[in-house]
Length: 346
Image 1 (cartoon, rainbow, N blue to C red):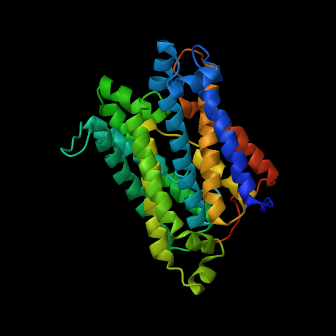
Image 2: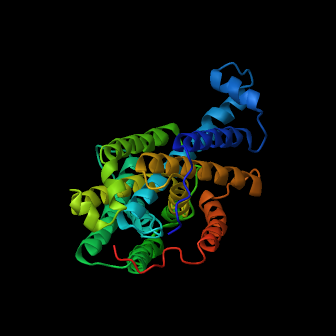
């Protein structure tokens, strides 16, 4: 793992990331088929804008997408940060460990079978199905970790196996799907903000707030896990209980985000790693730093998707992959190719 080059004051780092997030948020609202100036954005938000077309575009299209990018990026980054801590592995993320594929498979099953629960809306039914399958993949990984003393490379291999298993199931669902269902399933595969609305933003935000409150009360245990299992147990940390709880928390975060926007890669992998090299292992700053970075990366990807193909829908999942791949190469070069390849056992 990269040696931590922490900054003198983590608060300044969080303030800088917050300012960066605000700048990207304002840019995302301004850029589109036709540009809207910052003054128009402010007047529209405050209700003093007389141009009905600008107000409609901002309130019904751009603002929900920008807010969804923020909450989804924050959720995936938080999930990746927790997984890297739980497994003590810098390569861990919802995408690399198969949780994203599992959630997409659950969503696809709900779409194919037209599942409908009487007490839930269609969107929440899909999200619930995604959460169940994501939990299954997390429990499989938790069982493997609890029963073995696997090396970091082995854990990634197990994640790849889980990923392939659910990808195969997803391919089978696509094979049997009708053209209408196939179009919806393809949406999950690419990842897109096009179906964002305020109700979905509220749901994801609620999940994040719940997970943050839960995490804050146990942040000491997360920091203790980075010292190794033996020392953590000596400090009174119940390893199995903590790992099971946070595997479920990461499933909730990842599956909720994926159920509404589709599979998004690299956000949960890169953001926590950059935050850790900046803020160190103190999770009081590492978690919010990861979330701010994840939200900023999603907004940057949203902006790039508009620039790459103006006036047309360009899946944001493709953009995050295009941006994430060179970032991964930078990380590997900075760490001289040893990123996540040590033989340490977890």
